[in-house]
Amino acid sequence: MTVSALGTRVERQPLARYTTVGVGGEAEIWFVETLDGLHEAVQAPYRIIGAGSNLVIHDSGVPERVIRLSGPLAKADLTPDPGLSDPVNGLIVTGWVGGGTPLPGLLRKLQALGWSNLEGTVGIPAQVGGAVWMNAGTRFGEMFDGLHTLEIVTPQGVRHITPDDLNWGYRNSDLPRNHIVSRVRLKLQQSTPEEVQARMTHADDARKGQPKMKTPGCAFKNPGGVSAGMLIDRAGLKGEQIGQARIAPEHGNFIVNLGGATAADVLGLLRLIRGRLAPALDVPLELEYEIWPEEAAADLR
Ligand code: FAD
Ligand code: EPU
Image (cartoon, rainbow, N blue to C red; front, side, top):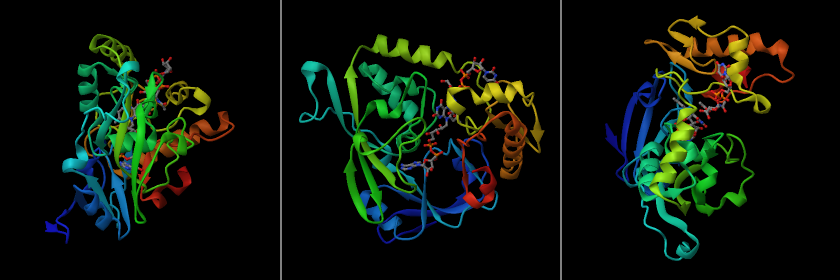
């Protein structure tokens, strides 16, 4: 372990520890806790990692430093901002929520407060910054339903933007790569804990068929609103296995790690699916997973 000039902990570690599928070689990880620390960290080639729940990282790792938001940048200040909130109309605009805050724990707090708008994202094992960057969601709602302000860090500095500044959509925030979502203010609507819980339960019910093993979630975006999982299922590909990676028998769009899977095993399955479905589709399936480094799977883009 080393410490940077501004006190950031820097450690070389396997990225497999920081991805939900549990694959990925080594990189230098910067555990950044402050905006000054972020400014320092982005002065050399970098990547930003959240909960690693949409990443397949090559077995040889990545050469860039990998930033992980920690400490205060992974905590949420849910105090309503008096200047921005409107209690008469039940509008709550929160204090700053760090981009490294785990989304599931945040949703539990919002439910207890009876604050609505983000409950459709229940069950997504992301950090706030990663969920914003992808505009993660389900058919019951998405991250941009509850965003007021985004604080963005790049090598050029820090700036504040609103969702209206972005052309966001399905699984896409429109934020350029490596624009770090350091913090956000949430925009929520006063409801009751019971109502928020009921909507969370309803959204969570749609996950009952998803596998419980190590996975980076859905591999491909749904083409034109059709379930990619259903297409993969109909093509008879569920259960196909390469090395220790398998197309989940429960849901065709999930690839799971049976134990010692490598990135190469996962990429092999992605190529198998794309190739097998290509003749039936006008446009090839678009990857939802992100592959690091990108050159490892240029053919899948
Ligand atoms: P990572 O996977 O770490 O990174 C993904 C991308 O976000 C990378 O480009 C990374 O650089 C960028 N990023 C991360 N943090 C930041 C930041 N602070 N600022 C800027 N960019 C950043 N997704 C859905 O949309 N809906 C679902 O229902 C869903 N279900 C899932 C279920 C399971 C079991 C799993 C494992 C995944 C699921 N996912 C789902 C996929 C995944 O959770 C989302 O894509 C999520 O947005 C990824 O967030 P993350 O924090 O893990 O980001
Ligand atoms: N289906 C099959 N076979 C399968 C998978 C699905 O026939 O193997 C059928 C289901 O029976 C259902 C339909 O396809 O009739 C839709 O399935 P599901 O409800 O699972 O939704 P999905 O469109 O496959 C999307 C998201 C998930 C999200 C769920 C629930 C995408 C790519 N996937 O899946 O998001 O959790 O809805 O809202 O948009 C993710 O993005 O990583 C992810 C997991």
